[in-house]
Image (cartoon, rainbow, N blue to C red; front, side, top):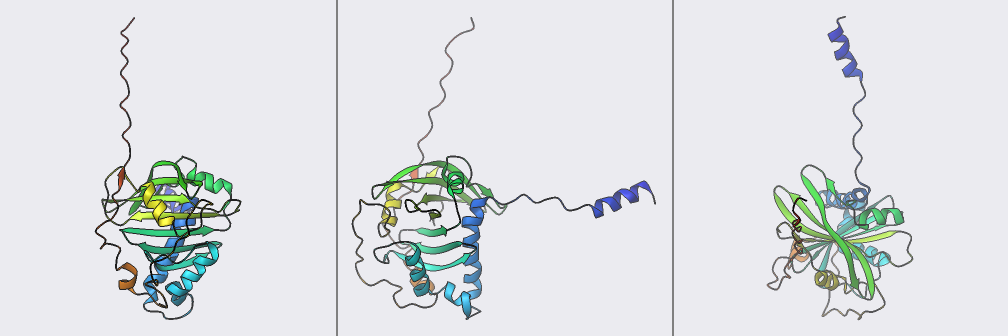
Length: 264
């Protein structure tokens, strides 16, 4: 056998290169969202078991209420569905004003995972080829008397960008991690962010901190008694509001000062 053939044979027998592991936050957030998306797609064809439950608003609202304390189901939000895997549960909702909201609860997370996501680094960044999410800033927001960590991100797919903010709403003293992810459904420009007031408004029905007013809905919830996915009821108002809050721009960084000293 020639040297060339031996080299070819060795290449064929060599183990495949080790794939780069996905960021932990993707398994925490993106993985949970993916579970729901798969269930939602096949839910129209398979009408049994977990798939049927995943797109049943009544079941998913009840599931969310068991994990997160809320005053009442907000009329401005409609649940699309939910799912869970290995200690992580995810609920996806549409929100009037042009926002999609994902709530993720990971009972197995620890302080290091929260630090990786909200510690000011790039722990939330991910590139899957067809879509990419980049951190463009982080900070804290006061909500109901509590300071919450957040990360501003831009998600890009197919040349289009959307503003996204992830906020740590984990109850104080809780050993796990609870995150709310808010995405603007309309396209955005580089540097666009979802403002603090939008986040506070979305979180009004949720019990986050001690300084709050009890949320009282202005009527029955649009999904009351609904036991299957209904696109019109779920997305009916998401893009129709005339008073949609505008996205904010990140403050521009000052230009570096030129060195005025001459050569000595």
